[in-house]
Length: 550
Ligand code: NA7
Image 1 (cartoon, rainbow, N blue to C red):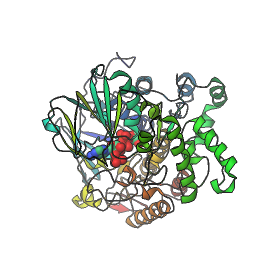
Image 2 (image 1 turned 45 degrees about the vertical axis):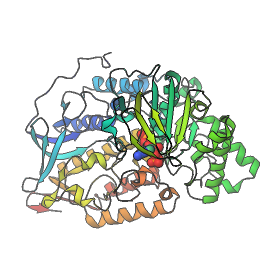
Image 3 (image 1 turned 180 degrees about the vertical axis):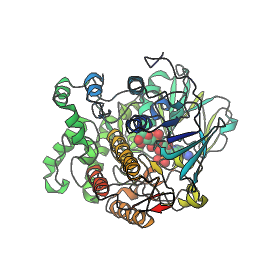
Image 4 (image 1 turned 60 degrees about the vertical axis):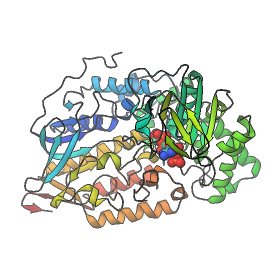
């Protein structure tokens, strides 16, 4: 199926010099092209995939869908686009989102400057010229004033550290790099390793097709029902009375989405009955509202334990076998501190006779064998092995770029103790490099579409400012970056999040520094701070031109 209305991308010759190189052609990269063109910049895009789409190009496993409501997971920069595009489901499927991205790329002619099937192999800052020199695996070298890394937060899939994968003679796939050709599931003995969001979305669908499904669970995760279905026409009509204003209002919320049922009070401020009723309302509503329905669930251990106990009871009420229910109950970390999942029929899937749950904390996986998975208990024969084992989140995609900034310093060295950046937008010592949804911005803790638009708007305005003032170098100040890092860590420490061994904190990658990688103070506060900084003449940034400084 051809997803886009115009002709598929033709390979373009890389230019030798442009104003900006944009790495990535997902939501962030495409919008960066649009905005940079708008201020008269010449742009070249580099994209590893053969097409636009970013995360939605790669994550095409069964059940892949967005867990932000479609009406909010949308670009807001064009009122006509907002008016004309219609989402069919409350939570859009990967395919529908990919169609949308293709539609946007066609509509705004965003492919014409993108080199597809191309990877950046190195990016080196040339201090004499205040330019980045970008090398690709096609042998191109492109010079640019500004380098925009729009590489996504969850775009480097990770295989587990399990011996023997190379010995396996069956087929294995990764959710984060699902094959484009059909994967045969019907009649197969399928195994899934990993029960994060990707596992939890795919397991119910795999179970429906497979002859037998074995789920290897290391950590039971909290999941709430999505209650997906057609977009509610009444709610849609209400949003569409002023869709642009609705999207603008999302920038003034903590999570970049409307708080439709949040109480705004502490879970401890209401009686048991009222609290239970509010939890039930959140459970019945879908979205991540169970986490936000009271304002202290992520901060107050007592409030958190009440929400956790509510989910535990729900799991017991859904899963028929009490022993399996107990295995599915998350324990040992506060509710929501590993990313909450949104599911369609996840827990009920374990009532099926063809589904088996293996607790690999009790009986760890020893190795993958020629024919299946060997635990300390027994071997499980498998025809199709699905790794839903996550990503080297947030820093992984940036660190593969081989970036060297001022003085030849590599980003990998600069970040050996953690990904320190100023606002998640810029990194001290790496002039003219901007990151979209970079570490220490709200990114994965908020709705990514408004955060992307906000970041790109801010970056392009900053570039525009530099151009107007005659500067050709902009960089974050080391001191401002340190202060921001303290602020990010201070706010994280006020919450329960650091207690979860999550990818937010790098816990899923052996050897990765344990640093909470997102700003948790709220998207609203973050936006206000970024505005303040820009309005005050970019406090914490230094601007200069070859031979002069401000
Ligand atoms: P996640 O959320 O990182 O989940 C990965 C899962 O894989 C999780 O259950 C892990 O268990 C498990 N895992 C990882 N390594 C292993 C090994 N070696 N053995 C067994 N199990 C393992 O990734 P997802 O793709 O599901 O979701 C990522 C985000 O994408 C999601 O939050 C959305 O934002 C979209 P663990 O918990 O580490 O014990």
